[in-house]
Image 1 (cartoon, rainbow, N blue to C red):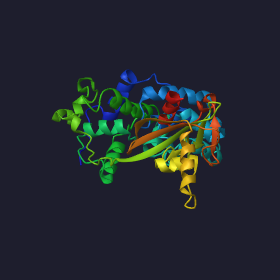
Image 2 (cartoon, rainbow, N blue to C red):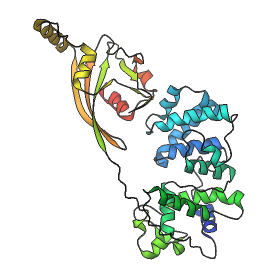
Image 3 (tube, helix red, strand yellow):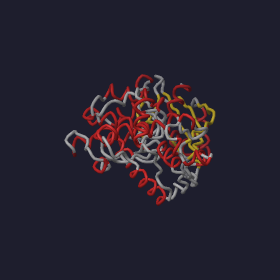
Image 4 (cartoon, rainbow, N blue to C red):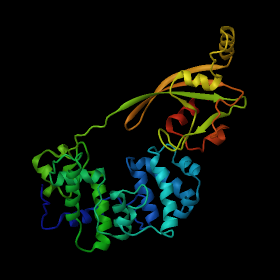
Length: 368
């Protein structure tokens, strides 16, 4: 195990001083100790770039200025505002977390990382971020940027896809936390780690000459900073074929159904999704029974052909672990295409504010 190397001024002190002068201090969720705002930003920033989060963050605060407002909102309202930000389980957990803060903690976020972790969607690093930023608790954060900074500073080359190795890094991170002026140092130290990873200690071509801790960075001394962190486990990708029914009625409304609470696009609104062209056709036109004569079956087929049908170009949508190959059948219908209790016809004005998966939103915007 690598050792934490410090100079005359500790790693933490150096980082705190650097952050105060050179770090990011302009983002809307900074310079506040409001746990609701910090928590909201931390959830949104998971696997999402700052530039993308900025607009969503402002939009959420406009509609839900307090945790009580968020808790009182409907799931459809929350998912609608989140639409396009991706990783929708975050939105569902966000909503449930707000409800739990109201019911279990009297509307006040708990002040320790341990208690924060009892809330849905809040893991160890997110809990530590809220606790250190808002309550100056001496706890270590460990997002992707932080892992990169720390493994390079200490040349920690153990494979982080192995849980015991990541636990060691957590322990090292805790040992390096500030020991003086904790009230002011902890928020700046946590922010400094994030800022260093986001602006200087980049995954590719790190700006080592501008790094405040380059003198004690063992990876820099080795001349191999880009070798860290080490994580060998690769994501196993899969693929799935979907058939999408884009149905419109005479009024130009589109048929949308609310997806189940689990699975792809959980709790979002979507055009009907089928696993085959046959199942799509059966849902729309019914299935010829074995007792029907060939003449009746032929007549039904001819009737089907009179429905305005268009096969749109197939497209691929890439998820974290899966590629979705989507076939689209566009139909003009006069009746409901499904018996789903969660389905309804929606005008463009109405579906624009629904929680829609990004590919479905693009499909509706470009194909209607």
